[in-house]
Structures are given as structure tokens and as C-alpha cells.
Length: 224
Image 1 (tube, rainbow, N blue to C red):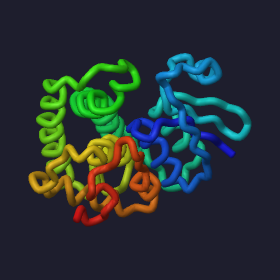
Image 2: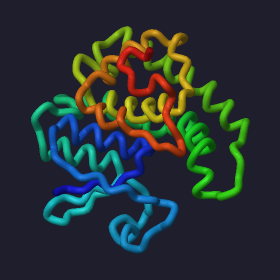
Image 3: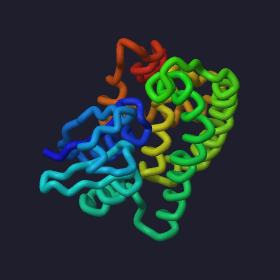
Image 4: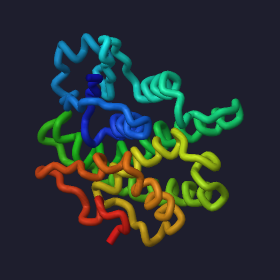
């Protein structure tokens, strides 16, 4: 069976998991503690990052964007990258927004300080300035997401695309930590409720760790 080397709170790992689930492909999750820099894993991906997909024939593919576009090209039912150059351009723009800008301004500040820091720099404490910046920034991003959703059925147009998946992967991590004030972002909340209800999100919403439990509403489809 194909294997996905992942970290459960990595938004990039979650992005690939969602694409595999949307395509209804079987796969096995393999937890990879990237901070250990295992030699066997580094031989698969010298960058030492997750996700890494290993196909049944042994083919190894790394980087979430590369993996997701590969899957979409091989399994062409229900394309997630659009059907025209204009659609693909907008989808790629929004994927870059969430993978790059959102991740840097929000996820790295919140997930990085709250959770990952304990593994990469043991003994350190969260930087309150980074936490404050992450919480301020997430509000701006959700306002933009809501603006998009007011004008479209999904973020990039009339259909679910890789843009929605990239956004859901990042936002699900932030929502796990309870850092979103959904009452202030009704349109973004409507979009997230829609994607949260999809079968592909079930395993993501079931993720939880005793050492770092999710917000009480995390798995609830109605946020109650």
C-alpha cells in the first residue's frame, strides 16, 4: 500500500491527506518525527521535511505541492487543479497564499511557538510576541477568505479545488489549537463548515493527542 510519511499537525501533511481522501485512494499513514532526522527518512527526502509519499512501486515524492499536483495528474477524476489555464492560475495563487503567506504569518507563529518549539528547542518557552502576531494575522486572513467566499461558491470558483484544501489544512491546525474567534468571521465559518462536513475531513477531525488536546469544538460540525 502507498505510504504517507507525515506529522499529524503539519498543515502540509494534512493537505496531502485531504487530496488522497478526496480522490478516494487507499494509503497508510506513517508518523515521522522530523526533529529526530532519521537517516532512513533523510535518504528518502534529504530536506528532512514531511510530507513524503511512497507509492506502491517504491516511487518517492516529497513536497506537498509536488505530491498534490502529481496525484491530481495521475488520478484525473474530479480534478482539483482546474480545467483551464485561468482556473489553474487562480488556484495556484491561492495555494501559494495559504502555503506561504498564511503559514508564515499565522501557523509558524502559533503552532511553532505552542507546540513545535518544545521538540526543536527543548527547554524554550513560547514567544508571546509571536503568539500575539499569529492571532492578529489569522483574523486578517479569515476576513480575506470570507471576502472570497461571498463572491464564489468555493474559494477559487464554482467547485472545490486545491485552494480550498490548502486553506482547510492550515485552518484546521489553527482551529485545533482554539486560536480562531469564529463569531467574528461568519462567512469564513460558513465556508469551513462546508468543507468540515466532507468525508475527506473525518480523519483530520479525529486527530488528537493527549499531550496536546484539541479545542472542545474542533470535531463538531456545527462548532457547538
